[in-house]
Every structure is written in structure tokens, then in C-alpha cells.
Length: 257
Image 1 (cartoon, rainbow, N blue to C red):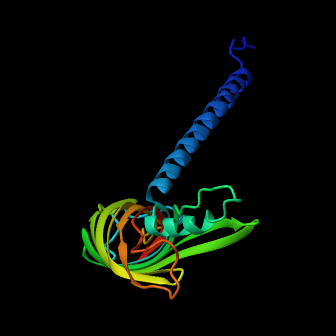
Image 2: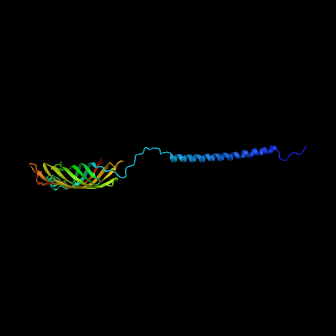
Image 3: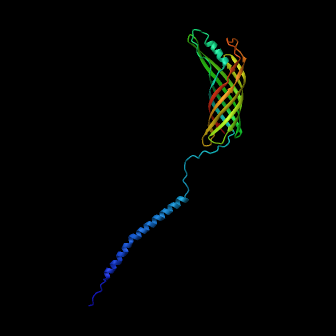
């Protein structure tokens, strides 16, 4: 029998099988890597083409508010004034009793309430009819600890012309000169006359459409009303006018449509 070959068939088959088995992890790793790359690319494409999900957020406020030709306003005021004839009348009563210590009985505080509506044909100019009520309270001691109250009132109906600096933003500035017809009364006296006014202020708007706002202003008024009717028994001091000339700080609410 001849000598067998040095390479055995069984050994060659085993080596071939081992090589094939060794390549399996490499192929598996390559397959996993390719699958990961495909998934990443698919995710990017989906994010690019898919529409954004709707949200429940409110739409933003416009940068420039639309022109609102009608503006309604309710305002209150706190001011300072010195009605000399009225104060002279009060002092003559408050200090008539020498047993009572003299006190400062002058009216100085003026309160007001106003209703108005403005029409703006263009953004920068408007006309505003107004009606306002002004009053001032004062309580003094007249003797033996007795307190007496005095009230000064007036109603004014006026017309103001507003020049606005309005860029359609959150703040709107204005200057508003006006004229009014005023009627006042105090302790049986009544007076009437024309008044002049000048308001300088701003409207601070809020809301999605800037339709509502807070009104802030400084109001200068000159209204010296001549006495037209006197009581049957006037006091010791002769009164010739009811003076509502004042400086008033106003705060209110405004709405445009």
C-alpha cells in the first residue's frame, strides 16, 4: 500500500467550515450597521416631509393694531384746586366761633368721573365729546364739636380734539385740547360758564387685537364759573364765582371698535 498523502481530506473540510463560520459575525455586523443607517435616513426624511403637529397656542398679537374709529372711555380723576370764593365762605363759618381753634378748612381735593366716546376718521386725529362730573367734599368743625359738611359740584359737557401719536403699538400718546360748558352749584349758589382743558397722556393697549387699553393722563382745566343765582340769605362773604380751575390726574379704561 502506498503512503497516504500528508493532507487529510477531513482536515481540509474542517478548515473550510471554520473559515465560513468566522465570516458570519462580520456579515451580521455589516447587516446591523446598514439597517441602522437606513433607519436614521428614514427618520430624517419623515421629519422633513411630515407637517408640524397643530398646537393650542394663541395667535400672536399684531405688531401694528388696526385703526379703530370709535373709542369709548370711562375715567376717574384725582386733582388739586383752590376755589378762593368758596374757601372764603367756608372759613367765615368754620372760624366764626372764637372758642374753636382755627383749622385749615380750604377745599383742595377735587374728584371727577368722565364718560366719553371719540371718533377717529384717521389714525392721528379724532373728535371726542365728553361729559364729566366734578365734586369736592369738605368737613369742618363749626362750634361745640359740631361738624358740618360742604359739597361743591359741577357737570361739564365738552368737546375735545385729539392729536394722537399712534404707530399701532402697545402705547399710544396723545394731546387733547378741549372746550366745555360747565354748570356748578354750592350752598344755594349756582354758576355757569365756559371751561378750557388740555389733556396729555397715553393709552396702553392689551389683548390679541389691541382693542382694549388703560388710559393715563394729566388734565389741566380752567373753569371759573360766574354766579348766576344766589340764596335768599347769603353768607357774610360775597361770592362772585365757583372756580374749578384744577390739575387732575386721570386713570381709566378705554375700548376701541
